Length: 290
Image (cartoon, rainbow, N blue to C red):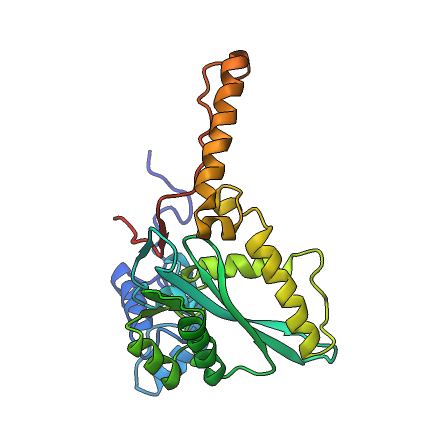
C-alpha cells in the first residue's frame, strides 16, 4: 500500500545541501574569520557580495561540527613536548594576582616551579607587571642562586616575551616555549600550584599592602617546599625530592611495607604491595598519539 502520510516524502526546500554546509564551515575556518562570531562573519561576507546563509544557519552548522567557539576553529601548533628526568631541566613560570584591600587593586606574584621535583625555585611579589621584574627574577635565579636549566615554559603574556628577558635567556642558552592563547592546560604544573596557593586555608582574602603580600608568600613558599607532602611525587616534600633524600624515604617505606606484608599476608590477599617512588620522568605537553 502506498504511504499516504503527509510529509513522508516532502523535501524541505530551505534545507542546505551537504556541499553548502561544508562551504560555510570552510569559510568560518579561513584566517580572516576563524576568530569571529557568525554575527560578524555574515555582514562581512555581505559587504563582499557573498551570501551563504543567515546568522542562525551559521550557528546551527557550527554547533553541529563543534566549532561555535573561535578557539575550536584555530589551528594552533601545540607547544613542544618537554621531558624532565632530573631537577633543573624544565622550569615553568607565570604570574598570579593577589587582591589588595581596595577593590581593583592587585599585587603580582611571579612564580617559577621545577616540573620534575615540584620545587619553587624562585618567586617575587611586585606592585605591577613588568618585563624588567621578570628579567631581575631570572637573573637572580641564574647568577645569585646558580640555578642552571635547559628549558623554560610560560604563558603568552607580554612580560614573558620582553626583549630584556629573551636576551638573558639566549645568553643562558635556554630554550623557551609558550602556551597557546586561553589554553591553561599548556602550563598545567604552575596552574596546579596556583590552585594549591589560592585554596590554602590561610590564604588571605585581601592583602593589606605589598609587605603583607611578600611576608605571607615567603611563609607559604617555605611551607610548600619544605613541609608540603606533594601527591605528584608520592607524598614527599619538593625539598626532599630536590636533595635526593626522597630515595632514602621511599626505600624505608617499601621496607616497612614488605615486613608488614610478610607478617600479615592475609591483609593483602592476592593484591600487590604498593611500591613507593616518584615518577622517573615528567612530561610537559606530551604529544598526542594518533
